[in-house]
Amino acid sequence: MKQLVINGNKELKGEIKISGAKNSIVALIPAAILSDDKVSLYNVPNISDTKALLDILDLLNCEYKYDNEALEINTKKIKNKVIEEELSKKLRASYYFMGALLAKFKQVEIYFPGGCNIGSRPIDFHIKGFEKLGAEVTIDGNKYTFKAKKLKGANIYLDFASVGATINIMLAAVKAEGKTTISNAAKEPEIVNVATLLNSMGAKISGAGTSEIKIEGVNHLSAGVIDVIPDRIEAGTYIIAGALVGNKLRISGIIEEHVEALLSKLKEMGVKLECTGDSIVISKSKRYKPINIKTLVFPGFVTDLGQPVSVLLTQADGMSIFEETIFENRMGHVKYLQKMGANIRVNDRTAIIIGPAHLKGKEVVATDLRAGAAMVLAGLVAKGTTTINNIEHILRGYENIVEKLQNVGADIKIVEVE
Ligand code: UD1
Image (cartoon, rainbow, N blue to C red; front, side, top):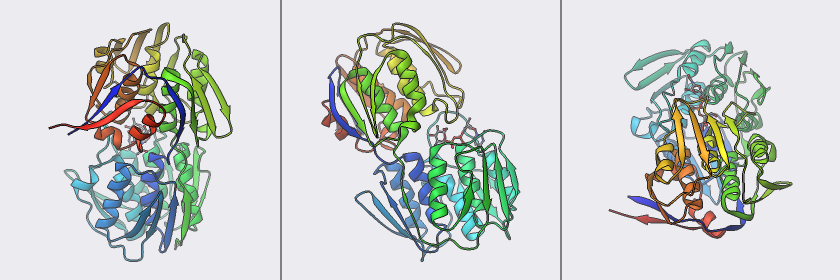
């Protein structure tokens, strides 16, 4: 078993370069299998979620070469196979093979996806979308079978602007006959990244990044190429680290508009930020104003940064409120922040945080990916040693987190325990 051990309260100085976005690459790999040729992906993050999807490509007999952040996928020998539970449950995004295999082979057999336990996370919008496109769905326990004689474009309205459903329906519709419109589509940058790859392969998608996406089906998709966008959640996590313990900490390789909501809330607190092109330089201030944060769909404050930012709110002078509106269970980190000395009260999906708290290092648990990121941030600012368990959650989404933090002066390491 691996643990992360942090000796906290060390100043962070230097530069952290942001990797490719987890939530993009996990959709770009399934999107690539729609090609009948080679697809090249650059800036691919080396995280365990990427590896889990490459295992699915292995199962499907799909060839690929992954070297130094470049991934080349060649679909010539791909075969349709049942994606067993052992593979599907490794991550949430295995469900993108539903849309991709349905479009490619008109049949998919796959098990319910895994991912962070942050709420019930149903996939009913995905299923309704596939049905509208002409697929028949059979559910047997955790096993989902989708079959279609042919897929036909349709008008699909999403009850909620779901990222997963928007991408999955887009994947299923690119080769459907005729026009598909997704209304109330999600607008997250990762959706634009996927649509850009598909269009480079010959798809006809317009409106990605707005709430109405139009897809004109095509018969064939050929070679494609894409740069994975920078990970805005990883960037946000390190920006928050800068506000906690930074001394001119530079976060580079970002797209500023993707982290706009976070920056605007940090400025409201009084965080010193210097934005220059694709970099942001952050230094810790002595005092922060308390603020209220409510998570929303893009371009609102992203739900994945709610837990990390709540660590910063423990350092503000007075009462802050953090309200989570997307998932039911984003408060797994609170119990451990309390153990470290934070003054937090949770009422359903709202946390009332009273600062400033002098956090002390303790043994804690990463209950999910972003709760784990929150524990790392708490460990960086706390006095003494923080030991984090269940770190496989963190390694799913943060490339080289230990090396990146060590390089800027953090005392952090992974230890192997019985
Ligand atoms: C994706 C991201 C996740 C991020 C989230 C919101 C990936 C792999 N994960 O998750 O990091 O926090 O977007 O930005 O990209 N819902 C339904 N039925 C459905 C689908 C969704 O009720 O069929 C609900 C969910 O339970 C949730 C809300 O819609 O309450 C939003 O979920 P969604 O945007 O789909 O999140 P994910 O794609 O799972």
